[in-house]
Image (cartoon, rainbow, N blue to C red; front, side, top):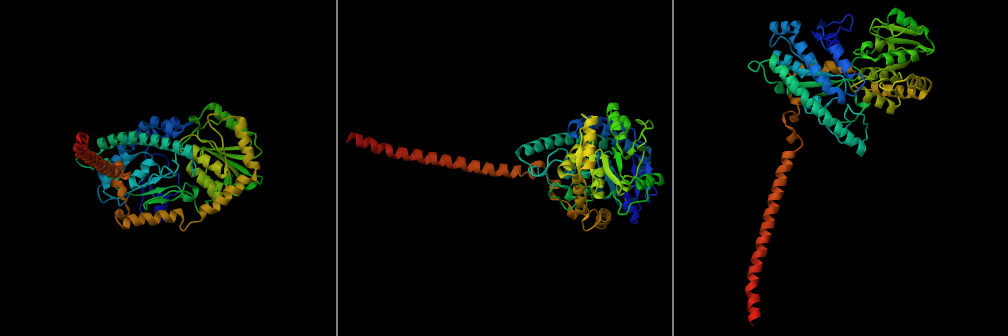
Length: 477
């Protein structure tokens, strides 16, 4: 997003907790050396669903938010710049609500950028509806259409996510209040309600089909270049000369070998080293899992440009949304080893759509991994399915980058675009579910019913009293 805006002529400054991955970028990049992000979050999540491990990382993510806000370079930014110095703040969102304070400090519009389809917390910022009956929770493994059992599971997963979201809000508010005192800054709850727009790295063709408010903008595939950059000479040579095909293997930018179980690493190496194909393996630590003539290890590889090469036969991936999208865009079938978060759900969708297969990391064996690789490599149905989807995914009125530029300019032109904000942002949960209205109407119905019953009883009692004297006279006669 930052690169797209800089290419369009905007003056962009980026503060990031990792190394700048875009060479020769036109934006100004300021690296914040992370204390917690790299190792603790990844290690806490590997091999589990985020719904069950989320509570274990809330404090870690809170520490990461606090580290960013208290970093000397950020503190210098806050000291030297104030309202009017920046026209817009864009925050990459991952439960880091406290960082919204930057928009409050500069008194400018706030845009959020999220790596997958919206989750519960994001929806609340802009009043996006949560349609539990037919929209699967992104952190669950349900798929449309949902039967009764799936809807029960979906309801439970949403409830768990809501509980964790409430916990995170409490922790983030403590960080915000400590660093941004109430005598100078609005409360975090008020800042949350001033989110102008949200970008999600998602496209409706991926599903699920759901309603969205106008300021939820899909930019699925934003990281994909319309024209691939030239590959490094040695990598280009391997791809060009391997007419039988090349396998690309990466478990994402956040996962290092040190986060993985040694036995699992050995299983992966044993299977891959026996394949009759060249394998490009992204591997971060200096200590390699082994040596094999068919494996080329690199600590960094231009993933998008590699997947665009026609000789890539298979992508072995962790199933992160960015990687899945790039593979779908370029029509490359997948074998997934999902580790945490949305990755299991993403790979469930990949399998159901016929774009590849997934193997469970916790029960990973040489047999299960090899069987999945051989099936996807030798059965043309996977490649045909993903290439069909690739044509569907690319068919849109504007490219993701054009979409980003248009909507950022729109927010700037209209000074936050308040007219797009849903009234739901300023309503509590009772009002959103119309529980107050339902309660009011039930109270009226109940009151009327009670009155009717009492009136009927009164009429009946009077009728009986009027009949009693006549009965007595009849007896005397």
